[in-house]
Length: 119
Image (cartoon, rainbow, N blue to C red):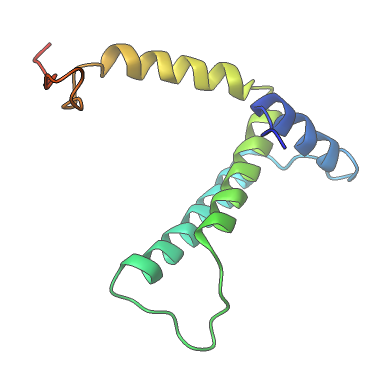
């Protein structure tokens, strides 16, 4: 099964939200929700890779589920503000591919090491 495009994800989330009278929350509420979800991701990463193990009574969540929650709330946020995520992503990648094209050391290409240069 092929993956969904960002447009398809935005449409699916919009169909889900549109069945409720409340609709999309206010942007400040969604920002708070997004912060909450990022905190839950941080907690899972800390439990798995950090120094703080989970308590035995804590429920098991996965990094995958937390990332899924973040994708959902980011999509809600974008939809509520009529932002096309594909367009936003393309603009950001253009920025990184131009501004940061020589920032990092590149992997070897055709036997030569292409290193970062000063702009």
